[in-house]
Amino acid sequence: MTPRLQLSHITKRYPAVVANDDVSLVVQPGETHAVLGENGAGKSTLMKIIYGAVKPDEGSVSFDGQPVHIHNPQEARTRGISMVFQHFSLFDTLTVAENVWLGLERGISLVDVTGRIRAKAAEYGLDVDPSRPVHTLSVGEMQRVEIIRALLTNPKLLILDEPTSVLTPQAVEKLFVVLKKLASEGCSILYISHKLHEIRELCTACTVMRGGKVTGVCDPRQETNASLSKMMIGAEPPELEHHDRQPGETVLRVAGLSLPREDQFGVDLDNVSLEVRAGEVVGIAGVSGNGQRELLYALSGEDRRAAPDAIRVGGKGVGRWGPAHRRHLGLHFVPEERLGRGAVPTLSLAQNLLLTRTESVGKSGWVNVKGLRAQAQDLIQRFNVKAGGPDAAAKSLSGGNLQKFIVGREIDAKPKLLIVSQPTWGVDVGAAAQIRAELLQLRDEGCAVLVVSEELEELFEVSDRLYVIAKGRLSPPVPRAQATVAQIGEWMSGLWEGAHAAA
Image (cartoon, rainbow, N blue to C red; front, side, top):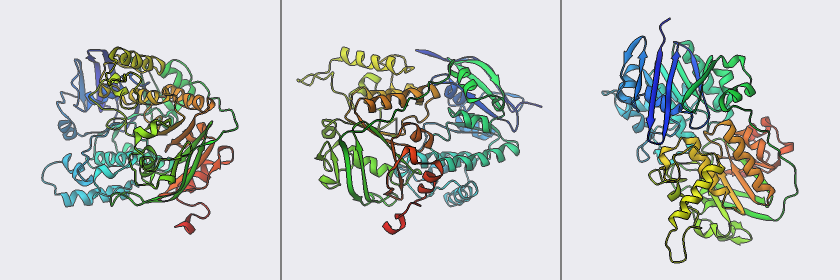
């Protein structure tokens, strides 16, 4: 059988790192092939080379048995190669349909594109409104747009970079049905994920990378999560120790928070009430686009329309206060969008510290640059961030490494209240375990922690109590020890007692 894709001795060097070092890879027609490795192993760079977004320094690429030199993504799509990026390539000011239209062949009308999007969305169970501007979408909804855009090209090779990182378990199951069907029809799939159970369920082959090199090839169906983890990071991730403890005083109290949507595609917050106490982790589960974004904007201070006493931090009504004022009370926040909100892409890691940390700013307003760089270097070492030092631009880091830096920046501030959205999105198993352990350590030191995540496994690992958000309403709290995945899954559809009465 002629391989669908064959990479031979691919090398790509950057000034601070060798991203790919003599990498060879073979993908057969109809094969779902995993590429597994820790953050910074070189996976995304390799995929961008295949897709024509990055040019290799050495090596060759063959597609359907023919040597090819793919100069840009448009040429890749013409050959039948589509890619869903971990960091989305969407224009915020355009609608979903307009974004998809840009990537398709000329001659097709926007009306036709809209119809095809609706058909694909219905066929694959991916809920997307073609008329919505992208800036109104949650991260999970943007991911659906990227997947549909790739499927509309009817690809021979589909590259998926962390496609399920912000999808619910139900949506993942639907996606897997789609991918298995595509593979059975002869489409080859290159699949990057840090979720080892997904790889074992979906993939028929696996190439393992570490430090830019291929360190092994295996059939993941014959492996365990522990053996795959050991191949990837050289060890099994440590077990989390989650000891029950008595929480202290209420740090965050939200009482009857109702806010109308700010745009026609948003979600109204309807009588939301919750509390987070010192020394506990509270989790909020929910399907993407059910009011998480609106709630987080209100809690962080980006949306200041709430009544002053609707949101209280440390006993003070902060509904009209901005983010900086809330930070003075000890509230630190990690948004779900890494690039653009969590970090300025073109600024260095050291400079990005100044977004929320002012230890290096003197009373006169001058920045102690040496101290700032040392502070960034400490974070790089503590959270094992693979980067070219404190002067590396945020956009030069892999998604997982940037996530470690941003989460580390806020944890290191020793907050009294930490609000985190999607804390381990796109992070490898070792780094995910470290971040979750750091959150529990914060809790044990008396910090109040609120985690908003679409990964139920993560919420069950770290939370003491759980809420579910659906259509802008919040469920009653349930202790983690009493919660079940089935119950939380039902509640994610709004099916808790009193939900319809409230509506």
